[in-house]
Image (cartoon, rainbow, N blue to C red; front, side, top):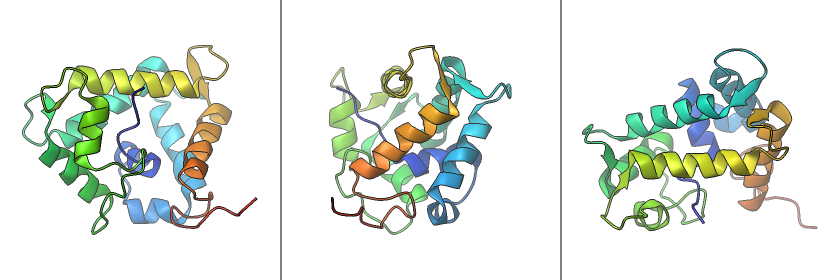
Length: 166
């Protein structure tokens, strides 16, 4: 199974052009803003095409040498851009470059191609599209990202606040 490549907030930061530190203060607002930015036609839904365009933008921003693939160094640099001074923990939503490559590099060439990135993005979209209508409404978007945060052991308040014990 393909894993997500970068944290939910990191994806939001790249999509809407805001510093990650500002987004970390209010992740729910950040996710709502990311939804709004990704909904380029303003119909209140993110289509598969809109999601794919945002993923392509993220790939293009990470592909520093513009060779159409992401090297371990580019993956590390993208992580550092989104999380200044913070090392990747190895969590599925916050992987090291080596872990990202292992999860995403389906052809084993040591890099993540644009096609491999797009396939991972499509898998994520399909997982979020719980009603299987081919688009993400705000409820699906927010619930999916909330579930990712909870899986990482955080609440919706900050990315580092431990989730309450049940």
